[in-house]
Length: 574
Image (cartoon, rainbow, N blue to C red; front, side):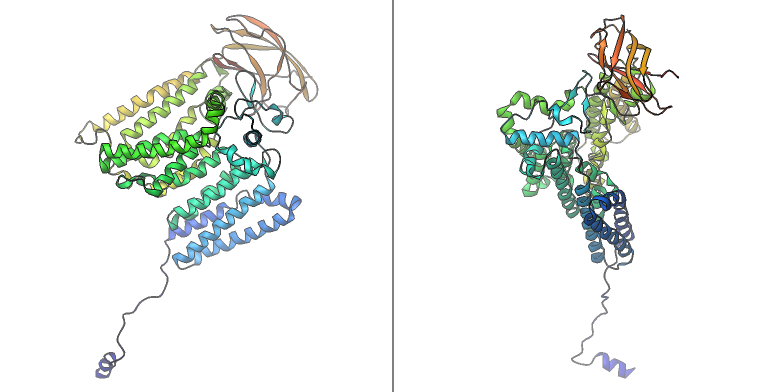
């Protein structure tokens, strides 16, 4: 014992506490998140590899290497011991996702209406021609690119988005014809936006960015299709990350100015950010007012809005000066074009469950009223609803006449960014109307009543739209058809409405819409309570009949007022 004590206190050999050199282990949820992001890259990859094996063997080889990377990353995600090591696995998963997205773009870049219109707008811009208000019907002739039909019996073939996408597409026109330059822009914007979001998120959450942006084959598909909304999404990503902290302490600072500029640029890329912006501004005002007071909080929001508006105006200045009326009508086109019903929202009641409605306009009113009601609720209960600011605006589209799921899907990475970086704790001290009043037995019922009152107009409007009756009563009297095609359709139409209606006829099967039929016989406008016989011909002379048993619907749209009347077409048996 004495020897041991002597050795411990020998001069020149000081004692040191035992220090573990083992790396700090990552949390289990971080491992699971990395693994889920890795697994999500499998989705859709086989289809891309199958096409590459036929057309681009070199790309197929790269995809095979990506398969190996996915497998190795799956093993490493579960066995690495340190947080830094797992962070490197996250980076490898990101690089694999970016590589797969590029491989898919090389193989799958078939144009869509949005990409060809954006690329054509860029070409017109380079040539010094007007961008807005000019129809380009030749872009859609016989190439399988879908048209957007309107209730006026025509199609929208003009550019109807803010100008940032054509401005950025113009330097890429050398890539090729059609919509390829616009598709390259949106794909590149998505890849850059994914890297930015991955970098801005806290390290354990970074694989979630890979999963939301590149996994599941959802967002990357819209990028390959050339949607301007993907450019807007990429610009919104740095805005939404830690957005309640914008203007903290009463100063925007360089980061806040950059976020405000990105917000303005996003609004100059596509219209969807217009619906998100009021929620962000209202939330920032509430948080800053709770921190700084009403005046200082208002000044922060004014500076933020001023920088965003300046960025938006700088991008739009040339078009405001050169074609002001056409520019204004163009950027408002998605709201005014009168496109036919389409989507996965409440409009399906009128499309598929009933024979139509004479109150289609009320779907639009319901959507706007719901957006206003949700914004009012957000202001009243910002401490509870603040974390949902990036999700709430899209609820309104479920009631709209165009309720396509793309409006929700393309913005889902913003949901993730807000969920990770804008939790409920950020809104605990936010200003909220009536929050200073002491809690009482009637406080909860009062909140419920307020919510009901704010949402009731939207719900009533939606009910009016969905319960409307088809104004045209139709009876098919004659069908001229061959073995696989229909060439003539004769029907008796009665207008049960109090207004004269101008009908536009088409046939549909499933969710798609065939081009409008030509009216060979029958009045262009059917007076109120009148009956007439119409003879219709398919635009190409023949309509390909589906397999027996598939439902064929005759749909009739009118524009003033907007109505839909439908009936089934039964082919006579031989």
